[in-house]
Length: 80
Figure 1 (cartoon, helix red, strand yellow):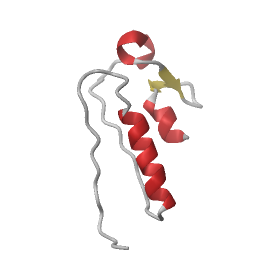
Figure 2 (tube, rainbow, N blue to C red):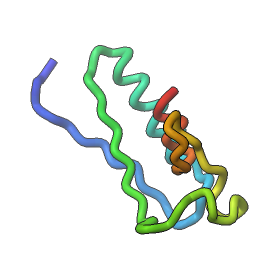
Figure 3 (cartoon, rainbow, N blue to C red):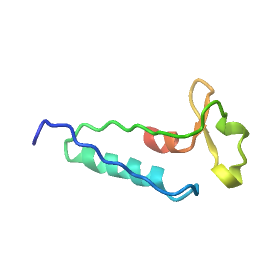
Figure 4 (spheres, rainbow, N blue to C red):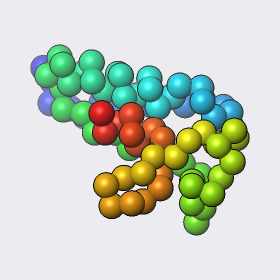
């Protein structure tokens, strides 16, 4: 197994609920099962916007972390 860093980008359109988070989390889990070290980074254009106040029909549901922060639902998929 090579020690060089590899990057995988999962991108999509502006529409929410396309499954990018599920695909990313599933791919990471499969790579971990094969012995790779995986780190997920989510980049969202929501600057100074609380996902808990967004319309769930437009953005999707929010995920509440252990410390009470309201975040994108994808963080819940990554945590599992």
